[in-house]
Length: 160
Image (cartoon, rainbow, N blue to C red):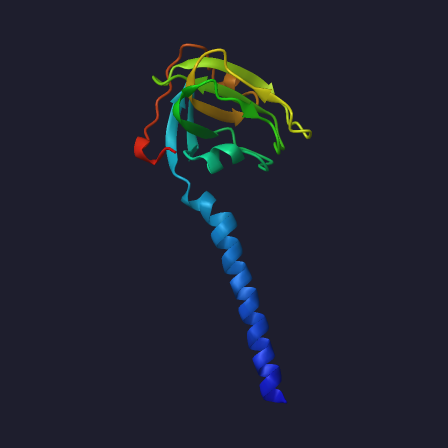
């Protein structure tokens, strides 16, 4: 009888460990492995996460409840287009900045509010290659303006 109890405990502990490992691997590891780069724009310098594929870009900052003033998300798209940004799943207001292929600011939306219905989206007037998301108020606080050039480096071969 005690051998069966011991075996049952091993199975339960093993199941828990597998669940913890799977959760880490599929939920937290992508955030740990997301490339980080330094972004300079306006008077600000931001430690920025990169979103370089469809999955990362569609997630964006969805579910994030707070973003420090020196943090940003840079979405890199495979080509220039009028990339729309949806507010579905957002938990906080953000400023959104679109850049062309030369990393020049071409369009800005300030204080984009979360949208529980998922129907609210924003679209630039010109073609963009990059979209930057920062906490609401950042554009005014660090004086980001149309025609300024952002400075950041990344490996273009990973964009998809």
